[in-house]
Image: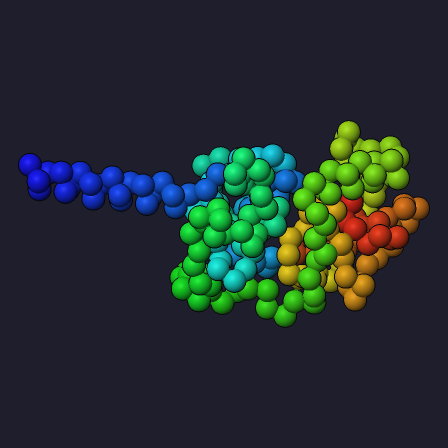
Length: 220
């Protein structure tokens, strides 16, 4: 009887540990799901704003977390993920301990994930506060006029020009989301007869507000 009780107790502890390894979270904006923990990894999909994910683990000294979304596993930038602590939504980045997120060292990752971080990054994207992305998108819609869709706020001719005129790609620490700021040292390019500039950042063409240097649209 004692042996059976001991086995049951160990099983319960094991299950509790397995359950605590995953943390439920939501994306605060449309967020890339990448094949590895860094902006140079391929984009495997996009988590929509408010999309629910399960966090598997995060890089201990970084902002990238491995997550599961809609049956797919990949890496997302945790500055744009929120989870609940004491009934309050909390940004996942820099809150791994209170959220009880499993953390790993980057150099412990296998399969080529450990060494392909940012590499020769040209700088870092300037992240806006959580929720800023929606406000920026709305502002962009007012600025740019006739749109492809209700949330796009950008002319189809502008998107076509950006796609047809690729420029030298730049890789920056962080993730390309609407509302993120582009550092001054990064070259941006004009779009004829359009109130935006553009660049190719972290594997994605983006439209940029020339006054604020914030990303207002991501070409997907």
